[in-house]
View 1 (cartoon, one colour):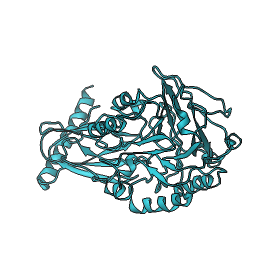
View 2 (cartoon, helix red, strand yellow; view 1 turned 120 degrees about the vertical axis):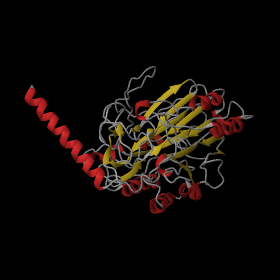
View 3 (cartoon, chains in turn purple, orange; view 1 turned 180 degrees about the vertical axis):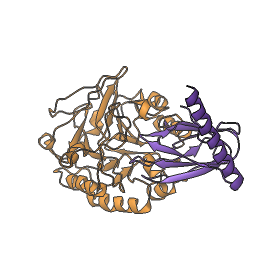
Length: 123
Length: 314
């Protein structure tokens, strides 16, 4: 147990080191995280990221989809199979979006400066 | 447009096997025909079907020109097969309706290809858009081509053979988490369009997404269709023709018969039988048995409407 804790602590410390190193090297750029569009769903459906993170949506379906903000903050073209769309989130808050072609497909990006990491996600 | 008022009523011989779906949902009963040829969509005691004697028209749907995934690498080719089937019909239909998803991605070249093939039928075609035809933000690519003389974002009505036809658009301004949607402007127009018409006028309403809720988990329904059906309920004979779900389904509720047509491009799964409603790949030699067209006939002297779904093959 004690050993495991130590390993985890090292891993976390390394992660923090890497993240802060990246932040130092490229302060204007955030990290990139992928949301997969598959089986008429956004996966992960809800994602929490730090400000400056770029989300890349990639369509893995045989049917085109779109990524459209409910507040019109961003809107993709139709993404055919394999197409990608990206948007960089700078302002903290909850950003809801959906597929304007299949509106039962919805997703959320939460931008939170105090979040533990850029890829933290919860369903 | 030519109307064949002297057509022989011999359509049964060319009618192929009709397949119905069996699916039980809340408050919905589906019938299974077990492959026995029979006509569908009996519209009860239509009061004035005599006005609609002998009118036959065609429905095609969901041609998805531009689609080239494994479920059908050549959607333009199967559309052409459907059109050839229509050209070979012994009785020329009065006209054709296309219930949307003409194109796969609203690209001009896809619409061009579709027009080139569909025009070979030498029939007047009345279109309504599917969501795949409305991909550009202004919907200009569809409306510039098919929207002439229509209202709003492409809805309209016309009369033929004593029947009043209404083409509706339920793929515009869709809301997050919602279904297909007609919207207030169109519903007000519909109310006005129907006002003053005799309740004995047979009505055919056509739109892309089904106007009854088939499976909301997949968005298969129209969230404000109840208001449209309210305006329609005083009519003795109402037929609702849709596409979108790429399979034949029907329901009869009072004087309203609902029916969805096959696609000419690819199959989609029956509700809830797959993780998602995406294209379903079938064996190559089975593809043409899941694609098809629909003949719709108002029979002279009979107060009923018959819809015959014919697969491209089998």
